[in-house]
Structures are given as C-alpha cells and as structure tokens.
Amino acid sequence: MRAFIGLSVDWNLFFWSASYIGSEKERMLIFFWDGDENRIAGLVTCDVPTTGNERFPLMDRTDRFRVRGTIERASAIDIHLKDVKIEVFHDAS
Image (cartoon, rainbow, N blue to C red; front, top):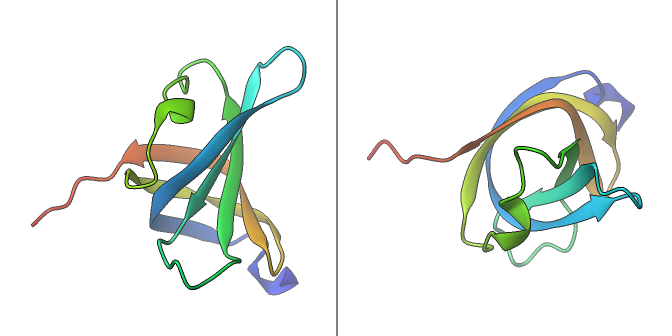
C-alpha cells in the first residue's frame, strides 16, 4: 500500500458519512465510497474544516462528489486523502 502514498487522485465517489473531530468540532472527518455494496472495504476518508462543510452531516448516500486530493495513508480498509477539494458531481450526460 505504500506505493500509493503521494499519488494525486481525481475520483467520483458517493457520500458515506461525516462526523466532527475533537471537542471543539472545528474539523470534520468525511467518508466516501465507490458505491459497490458487495465490498466492505474501500472507504475514502479526508478531514476538512467544519466551516464551509456544514452540509455534509445532512447528505444522503446517493449524493455523489468529485473528490480530488493526494493519498496520505492507504490500507486494506481505507484510503485517507490530504489537500482535498470536494465538489458536487455533475453528470455531463
């Protein structure tokens, strides 16, 4: 998994969940997935400032996003991204 660290990614992913980090709730951990219900691993995580991202705890698992960033950690369970940019996915079709 170390070979993936440092790679830039640009993925279209579904929202999974979001939770606040720390007692001050200044940051939020967001979970995304590829939509494959047959897989129990493969979550993509990132932490972002709460300010500007307040909508995420209200999202549905059908909401899709374009997630761009750099792989900071990778394991069999999840991939954690840093320097993340998250945009609502707009299908061009």
